Length: 417
Image (spheres, rainbow, N blue to C red):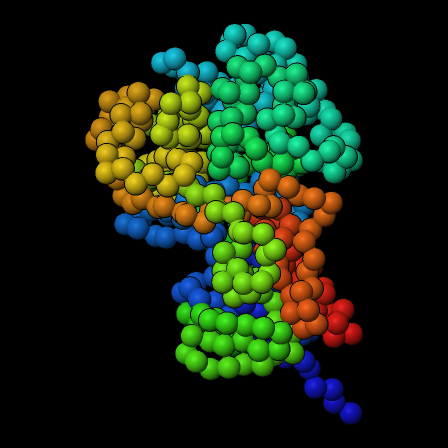
């Protein structure tokens, strides 16, 4: 006697939706994955422009993410690592902060630089030991802001301002360091154990890898959803579909539009970012390292020569430089101000760089989940047959998005029996 499978719809082909689809596929369940855009990936997208690979906003993968290690094929992605450290521009020159465990010789060389006090250097080592030896340390501390945690730990105001506010401000997309200290500690442990990397051919390779195993015909691109409720979704075309199970794998903003009663409190504005991509054939710094605004004058918070990290990001003989800004400034003089800053960092040749494209990502990271992680992820099941997933349900990271998608799929599998 044959059994009729329940119908399943996944709304959104970002990392959460793709992770959900992957788990359902492995369980032998059929589904339809609806995506409003013309390709998978959500916020993790890349464009090819004149032979250059431009990620939509500066993004990296932390290879130590547990869920990413479990789900992704790193060999296939051909991950290209960043140098384990940072060049901080402060008072007219760069000061290098080095991970001494990865680069011991460089660590000794730059360790004498008084840019960072000996006490702050010592405390970074103590913090590293704590996050690597204390199981789930981020769940063991009370909910508090990162800035307060760093002060309580004993870091000087100078080091908080020069390094943490810039480096982790770029990760959090806010420089007040009001993000949950639990999130900070998790990310600190990930950076400490595996650093940061990008796929050889751009961040788009991550969702593309997840999508390649989708069953034929299961993905519908350019298909927006205008409304949904348990048991029913309406497409932009006007067609109504009635699946047995619906997984909402969309951003926090789209979720609020589709289900206005989902959030008890007013939704906080998402964190935004701006990225300017420049190209040049002139010499650029050789070290595949991130450069940071230690002065805190901006507007650029960080810059890097992506083609030195992953050569395939640029055609032969060319270089690709990203300049990242926290927020989405609209000044018509932005390009000129950025060039002035880059010229101060890298020399007068920055005035001859070609601006290839600028991206303003107004919904780069969800705000509310960053401020408070609580005692665990948000509930997956909203109603019988209706589920949610996304980084805003877990934590705002690639790892959180992948976990959330898997958990949504597991909830469906459990309901199907």
